[in-house]
Length: 456
Image 1 (cartoon, helix red, strand yellow):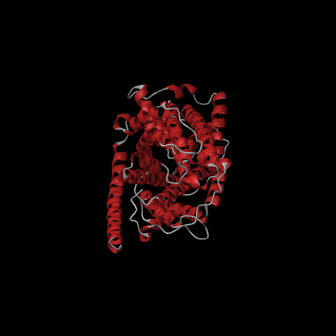
Image 2 (tube, helix red, strand yellow):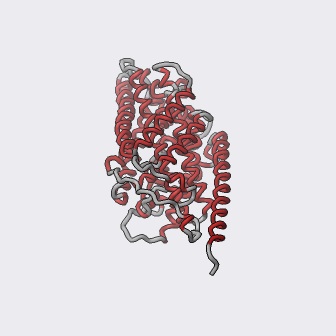
Image 3 (cartoon, rainbow, N blue to C red):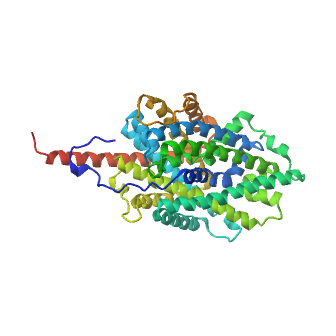
């Protein structure tokens, strides 16, 4: 990324390569598990309150936008199977160091705001089914435990993800089954899921809901940062991403449909555990504590994968010399980027202490929509860059539609809450400060190195 100073002193210390342990099945579970989780379990009611009973349409629109962008990611990860993800693609396409740094920082922050939202959701209505405890201490302890799992190793973390994915998927299938049986018995009204709030047009409401619902569909891009730990990424990624997004998109629309069909919008919109209300309304026979436990597992899975993504992204950036090389230090025995894990965990705890689920979730979507706009542009710019190996090539119309849709959903025209711009702005200002500090350090090191070299 940065220019070499020509001296060994400026080169990062050699580190062992990451272990390639993620095969096709594990990667598919990783994608599904990362998309499923906090968004659908915690924010379905908020989206319904924004749109009305037709909230499932907002999830459907988010699914389409996510699929446009996924085609760009699949092409790029096939060409450049590295851990740095969007930042690597931005650098290769535009060659602007500052832009690359800010993209990397935005993606990292999106993972941390998502994990922060999950940690806060963990202490919400679902946990209250067991005992009443303050949310913040629970969120902090929750993130510390995830850091230890992440440090233990990617194989252990991803296999734990398989278990959690099965649990959270069973919870959503249960909601679909409960909804189907309840409607067949005359409980609820399917017509409610076709109604919109009276404030605004149908299109405007669906778009506004999608601006928040998109948080529930993000996560597929995290898998790109596991490229260096995936076997045969050129063949593995296309099937895993497209299949994973399609399955989760369909499940989300069905869950949102049954939620608004069974639960009054006033109740649904006020709950931090909206799917618990679906169980309460449609299946009085099912233990609420058991579904709450499933939801807690789902939230845990979201947070774990986001923390894994953030730490791997920092590791990848250190290898590209965009952040200090110490952040790329790999533990000699566990073979995990332990310094990056510690760094991102501390930041996540800070964010969890700052905002609530809705604010942090919306900020996650905002940051990633901005990044996705650049990624969709990058895939078109990089068509001129040929590689020797075969890889997937996205139909050109998809990245173009991805640019338009992601940009629109990131703007105030989509009805996005202004508070999310404030949070994102503060985070990006912090990134700007870090970039200036890193630039000054790099410049000082380069000057010192050039002064030590003999003059010819």
